[in-house]
Length: 341
Image (cartoon, one colour):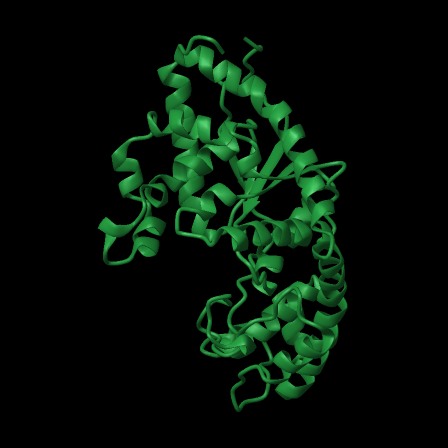
């Protein structure tokens, strides 16, 4: 068995679901941070296709969406040579460890997961078992690589706490102090919560029936400009200070997006446009969004046109991920008492 250590090498793991139509919220909330993290950490970035099938997916769409998310990582600036970009399903250790952790986690813990209640809706009996035990698979994703840090949004904090509880219980149950680390949440500056361009009270979403509600990573420069021009506003001029954004969701959203893309504080963005009409903010935001997003979309289209090249990157990443996962999984098998490992 490899030496168990209480001090683990700093390592980041994060995953993105392979849903098509990646939008500005996905970029600002996750993918952009992946690019920054690779400067300071060893990173594994995973397209979580095993998580995706907790609800039914069209197989052809799932394959295409998996490639598209990988392409977005690379187009945004993730370096797949120096870091690892892969899809979960090519590393069977994720599913193997998830089963072990299913047997470590307690029903009471999972019953407290608010995201299952939200996603399953009123008829919980019809939800897949996979959706219920999804947090255990997420814990396996993290612990399989003995990751020390996980970038998380508000909606995943509870799942990371569960991963910490599972890690602690495994270590205690199998007398393996320090084997699995206690992964820490990685918070990178103020969270960018990107809302719909048609309704500042709702999150930007690919499921919104209005295409004008979101800027997608594959939108052309003209489409980006058009959607920002048509974004919902209120009748007043832009506020003089950040506190005055209270009760003005559309102003808060557009200024928040501008601040995030300009890599400045919301307060600075408010000061820049204080007292001006929305038209001035929209013109500046369109110019900035095109400069930041359109080149990524162009590179994504180039990568999407060569699926074989994307598949080769994912296969290479999976091979390197398996090389990290196998020694950990071999130790898990021995600790649990499985023969033959």
